[in-house]
Each structure stands twice: as structure tokens, then as C-alpha cells.
Image 1 (cartoon, rainbow, N blue to C red):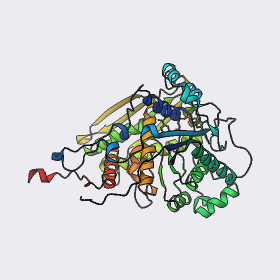
Image 2 (spheres, rainbow, N blue to C red):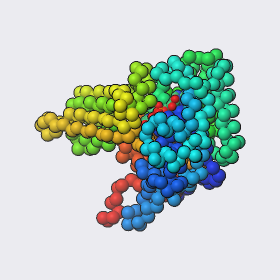
Image 3 (cartoon, helix red, strand yellow):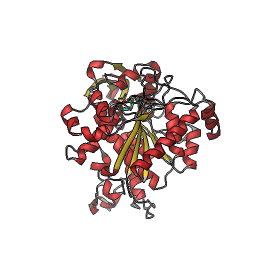
Image 4 (cartoon, rainbow, N blue to C red):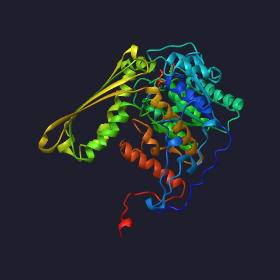
Length: 439
Ligand SMILES: NC(=O)c1ccc[n+]([C@@H]2O[C@H](COP(=O)([O-])OP(=O)(O)OC[C@H]3O[C@@H](n4cnc5c(N)ncnc54)[C@H](O)[C@@H]3O)[C@@H](O)[C@H]2O)c1
């Protein structure tokens, strides 16, 4: 498909501020990575923005630049990170407690990590029940809290001299809530902030403060934040991108690799049982039924949308899908996931697939944080506002327009992402038709 109009994208000049509510395992692994790369102590494995390439034009043209050379992304060395947490630990102490990275590596990064101290958090125990901490803002209405966060953002921008800022949630998973009347319009939401409406969560207060401050917002956790009319209205008014939700890093990543493959060969599914053990603070928070419900909903939807049982009733009408997460402290961040997949083939004959994924949660999530920060900044400079569906690739429960279903198939998501980059760069979109080679 021809596309010769390049999108006008403002250059990535100056530093890019990255503001993160929640400075736990994922955030500190991300920050430690940035500092390690600066010192030549590792490579950004898992990051599409740093290692990925993009084919342009016909295969016979042999044009495959690095993504970061094709679109104007901020450079990793230009990122300046700040954040909030309910605990007072600086990033070095938090990384040490999270136990993801080895002490020998952390020791070499002690100075830059110790310099990142969390700002006081907006916290509400009704939304995260299993933890409590001292580093929280006190007094006032939810609107007052929003203004305090806006002030934090201004102070951070002034102190660091960043020219642009992105916010990305890496805080704990909040309790499951559905949109309420207070989320209907921006006016309702602002009245709710003033009246302390119990349906407004801390993450929504951070997102409101970010968008009001001209800062885009991405949600790495499964709870509802910007996926409601009120904050989407604000994002549109402010010309800002939003994206979410829930990093697609481990078991759901595997699920969205395998399910499209089974469907592509018209193999049926009788059941898919997924369970995990993990022992980090995330696991502790998810041990609460309300927070687990947010995760369960986000983890469950992928199969449903990929398999499309309405189109393939013979294959997928009756499968049983179960997702479990068990908090098991000895494992720390080294999660272990098991999947048992009961499939069937020719004449209905049953077969089984077993997956045992010994992963490291935060090692898989950190590159997704990096890519999202860089792509959200790019989207903002390209004038793209509202839901960024092209970033579905990174999320377990991608945000989407009301009139379409979310795209969960990771291969379609990657094609959509790369075609969006081609569109931005004024290159032809790739359809994979390929007939021209055989004329
Ligand atoms: N692979 C992954 O690790 C992965 C994948 C998908 C989603 N996530 C989600 O990312 C988030 C972070 O994961 P993690 O492993 O780093 O968890 P973590 O528990 O190590 O870190 C979360 C931090 O958020 C802080 N926090 C909680 N509420 C806060 C608030 N209102 N304001 C500021 N800070 C707050 C907690 O004190 C904690 O330090 C979780 O919601 C998790 O479900 C992680």
C-alpha cells in the first residue's frame, strides 16, 4: 500500500523524563539496565527499539534499517528517571530487596541507583490491600492529591531540565473495579476528585495529574486506569497518547505465541490450564482476591479473542480455560509457570502440550518498559493522541476502540506496530502479498 506522506514528527531533542509510580522489582531492573548499558555492563536484550530492524519496500530492495535509525527515538542515555513509592528505599535499596539482579552487578551501579529516591506516593489501602508503607502523601481530597502529583512533576522537570516527559505505571496491581458513573465524563471525574469518590483509584489520580501536565500515560498493570471515557476525554483534549494494560511478559506472552499457531493449522482445543508460582512483592499483592481478579481478567481474555470460537465452533466452542497464580515466597522473582494444553487433531484425536517456563519476571518486563517509554514519546512527538492500539504488542489486555475487539495475536500485533512505523516514516505498508516477484 503506497504511502508517501511522511508524518511530521518533532525531533527528540534534549532529555526525556520517565516518571514511574511504583519503584519495585520491574522499575529498579529497568533503571539498573539503563545504568549498566552506559557502563558497557550488558546489552538491552528483549528490546525491539534497541535491537529490532524493520524491512522497507520489496524484499529485493534489501533495505532493513534498525528501528532506532528509521524513526527518531530518544536515546537511552537521554532518559532521566524519577518515581514514587510508598516505601522510602532508594532505587539501590529497592533493587537489593527485589533480589532480581546479582549483588555484584548492583554494587557497580550503587552510586547512580542510590541517587534515585522515591517521591511520596498517593496511596489508598482499599485499592492495594496486602502492603502498607510510610512514604505517602497526607491530608486533603483526591483533587488535592492530584495537584500534589502535578507539583511533583513540575519539580522533577525543573530539577532535571528534561524537555519531554512520559509516565508509566509500574506500581502494584490495584483491586478489580468496573467503570462507575464518576468515570463517565471529565466533568464527573473532576467532581469526584473534589468529593473523594471511592471509585477513583490512586493510579487514576496519577494518570489525571500526568495528562493535565502534558505527560502521556502508559499502564503496565492490569487494573483500570485510562480505559474509561473521562480520562480518554482528557487525553484527547490535551493531544496526548495513552496505552495499556498489563505487560505481556511471561505466561501470556507464551499463550499468544502458541494459540495463533494452533489456530493457523486448524487444531482444536479442549482445555488450557495455566498456573504459576512466584514469591516477589507483586506475588504478595496478587495474593489478595481483589488484585488477583484484575490479573485474572487480563490474563483470561487473550485466548478468547485469538481463537474466535464464533468463527470456529468445531475447534473452540467448548474449551476450558483456567489461570492460577500462587504466592510462594522462596521463589522470589524467579517465577515458574506451567501450562497444560489439551488439543485435538484429525478425527478429534487428543494430544497434549506441556510448557514449563522458568522465567524471570522483571528481566522480561524491563525491556518492555524501555520500548513503551520510547514509543510513547515518539507517538506524542508525532501528534498521535488517545489509545495507541499499535502498542498492543506489549500488553496482555490491550486498550482498543469501543467498536472493535482487541487484537491479541502477537504476530498481528508486531505487524501492526511495524506498519505504524512505516506509515510514520512515509514508507509503503507491507501486505506480504508478494505476487510482484512472480509476474
Ligand atoms: N513481568 C512482570 O514483572 C510484570 C508483568 C506484567 C505486569 N506487571 C505488573 O507491574 C507492576 C510492577 O511489578 P513489580 O514486580 O515491580 O512489583 P513490585 O511489588 O516489586 O513493585 C510495585 C511497587 O509499587 C509500589 N506501590 C504500590 N502502590 C503504589 C502507589 N499507589 N504509588 C506508588 N507506588 C506504589 C509498591 O510499594 C511496590 O514497591 C505490578 O502491577 C505487576 O502486576 C509485572
